[in-house]
Image (cartoon, helix red, strand yellow):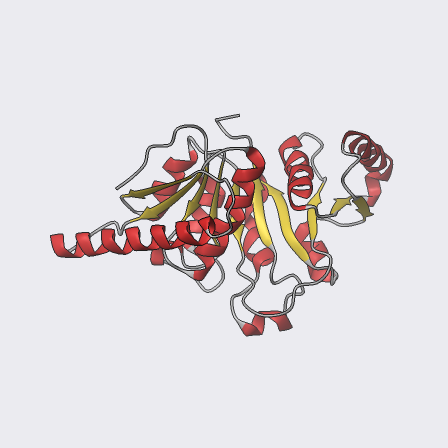
Length: 270
């Protein structure tokens, strides 16, 4: 039923939904870039009224895992893919997975069958309580992707190196330019930080923007297409506003409606 992880893997929650498949595809790139396995995890319902219901749930899980695995293997990459079915509830099970994971990825809706109008409750719980970095991947269900897909982060806390390092690493992996947000009131410090980053990451296209309070504030004001917003573990309250509501109407309210979010934190695996 389940394959035990051999080393710190990138974990993706799978439940058969389109959002979960998109998260697994995003996680596959992450695993390949890190040179680690991808671990696809299906979480069963926390309660089953009968043995038949339990086995039906497990069967659905195995089908979802195999479908996701086949989709990823069809690309022809050399990615090592593990699969596992674990007992729910989903939030608790995936948080437990995060203790030995390099990163954990879920879709913004659909995980655990407890979707809220803006963000699935399991994704919310993971963002707040996961031990490792957590990616919440937004399925771009409508609209045409822009030519330039930015990565954005706010350099508000000089001590939060995990946010900065995650932004630059994702930029390298995804060949994307980066918008670094800073406070105009501390522009001299911010300018020094930007110059240091440009020297450390000469291959990354880094663009500083001052007078922006945080990522949410920037996305509300500007039209730039953002594929990934990176926040620290103390800023998880911003996530629902960054992802925006689900459905066609969201494009009337959010320019950044297709952006995903990565909560940067140091993982126990290093």
